[in-house]
Image (cartoon, rainbow, N blue to C red):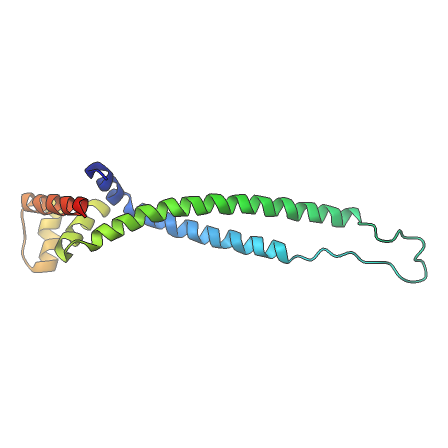
Length: 159
């Protein structure tokens, strides 16, 4: 992984994580719909009684045939949708987990500053004045924050 790829992953981390949660919910709903389609019972009824010779026996009505075809086509569409969703979930999960794993390897200060800079889009000056003050009751210059960001990024690349 190159530095530019890592920075892009960090910048799109929040968006990727949100997309992952949305796609997981869509996947869950699609699986529930597929399961409900499989549970629909389309049964045949045989006519017994006084006028049994009027109706033909063991013949599938057009209504039942159409329902079976609709269920089959819906099932196929849902299976295709599930395959596509699983593929996108896999890709998003890879991106999010690679960033998570690399962030775990950093120290607390580095992780907080890096996420504030890349993920939340804050400036180095803002981080030095506000975030660093909240964390340690001290302020730092933007150059110092840039050095911390650079060291943390290189550290993430070496993991």
